[in-house]
Length: 162
Image (cartoon, rainbow, N blue to C red):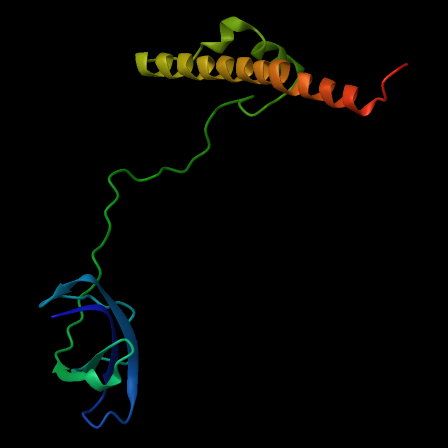
């Protein structure tokens, strides 16, 4: 069995005179007696069986070599369920920004337009609650911590009046 990282060399022949490609495989921290690895990125020039040597990282004396059958499999195609349709839509004024649009957004009745489900309404209510809590926490921190600390610092920096 083994664990850790294996370094691999792909040779044309058993004399190891030329290395076509080298790679590394991480086996992991658990000891394994068998494992399967898929190695991608094989150079296009490799089209037949090769002599492959594996050695543990840092131990060249433990190298083991074997002839391995070359087997090329095409990559699986990805099928998209729904294709994107490109086209020009009819939406005049969709991306316009101006004073009218800004004033329209100030109307509280417009704030809740577009909430089509209970989930969206609950999410909106939660976001509003978080904003209110954040504002209250900021005011509390300023009035109870920062402002008194600044006043204390200013009063300590002034010399006492006699």
